[in-house]
Length: 84
Image (cartoon, rainbow, N blue to C red):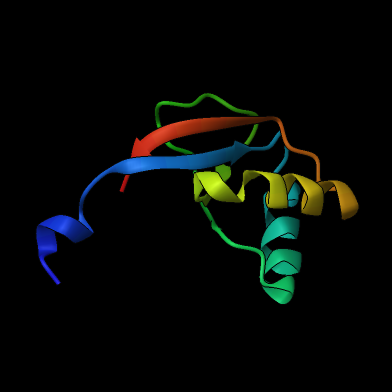
């Protein structure tokens, strides 16, 4: 694979949270259920309540919203950000 393609930026869904427990809960329950995405440090272009965020593909937005509602995981905001 071309290294330049692997480093290409694209729009990603970034979900922020008010507390550190919410993204950790999403990480634990989400991995157990096969939910797409992963916990990342909060991107510097975003100001939010805690230092963690969830990164996923834009196409996973509705799946993530339904999962977080079902498991009472409260998010602060959702952003579409260009990133690797």
